[in-house]
Image 1 (tube, one colour):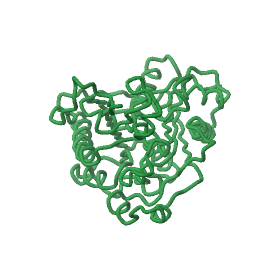
Image 2 (cartoon, helix red, strand yellow):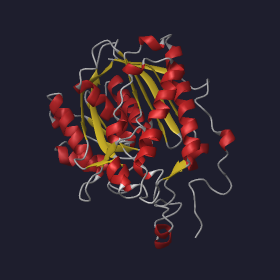
Image 3 (spheres, one colour):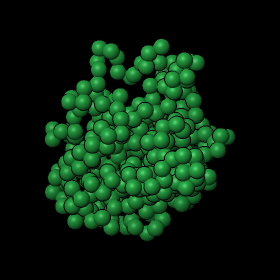
Image 4 (spheres, helix red, strand yellow):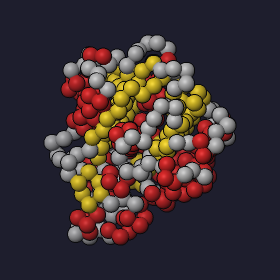
Amino acid sequence: MSNNNSQSDTDPVNQDRIVVASKSRQVNSLMGVQILASGCYAPENVIHNEALAELGYDADWIIQRTGIQSRCRAPEEQACSDIAYEAARRCLQNGNLQADEIDLILLATITPDQPTPSTACHVQRLLGSNAPAMDLGAACSGFMYALVTGMQFIKTGTYQRVLVIGADLMSRTVNPADTKTFPLFGDGAGAVVIGPGTDQQGFVSYTLGADGHGAALLEQPAGGTRCPASVESLEQNLHYLQMDGRSVFKWAIRTLSDSVNQVLDAVSLQADQIDLTLFHQANIRIIDAAAADLGLNREDVFINLDKYGNTSAASIPLALAEAQQQGKIAAGQNILISGFGAGLAWGAGVWRW
């Protein structure tokens, strides 16, 4: 059995064709929407680097190359819907909201409970809601995609309260024998409720992008319709996440810097006008390199990847909820948000709180 990638043999990956948030990428504005509440959850089981060192991993390499000191791992009986529900429950509690006040549930995830029904439907049931619910899959940029999608429903007046969740159990996707990838990922969930706001609230500017030419740089080859799960695919570990780490690292730094420059330039904002930065928590070296390139105040760049590692779609909402809990967010602030990852896909925006 061959290793069937998401790209067909007639459309091989050509890294020269991978675009990097080209200057022609459309930048939009979407105001009149506010974040009413936020909440987050991470499993109680914390795996420190020292525990991985006992299993043969290089703890010094992990911290030096990634900045990650620990990550959370869900127990076997806990599914994606369980952690998504807990983040959503806390979000509603923090906003003094009831489940029957939610008009729509959007869940960004690449680790669903099962292929169907959607994990969002499981969350809806657990919350006791009757709102329509659906999943969105855009990996580490999934929350940005889901947030912008939810904002459209608010802006058109279709709905008044949209629950947007990012949740992933990334520990279920990585191969314990892959010493360069396994330590990077963890499990977690974050959620926000959005609703109508003033014309000074929302995305002052934002952009979404994708480039499927880089799909094979970060993928799970088996388990879908191109390469269904089988005994042979399991023996070849094709159901595990595979990543060309060096290529993804270089792409992430370029894309992060370019997309952020786009959304800043579109509204003539300078780096020193950004009050808080919420980057996807993938690797401290990516964040530091982009922050330096953009001229951002490093003290205003929120970091929690040292505790959680890369939680994919949960990364940004988890950081947002913790930043709000720590009193780092106030009305009128400009908050820079950016997600980037598998797809390849990305999203960046300046949120006026």
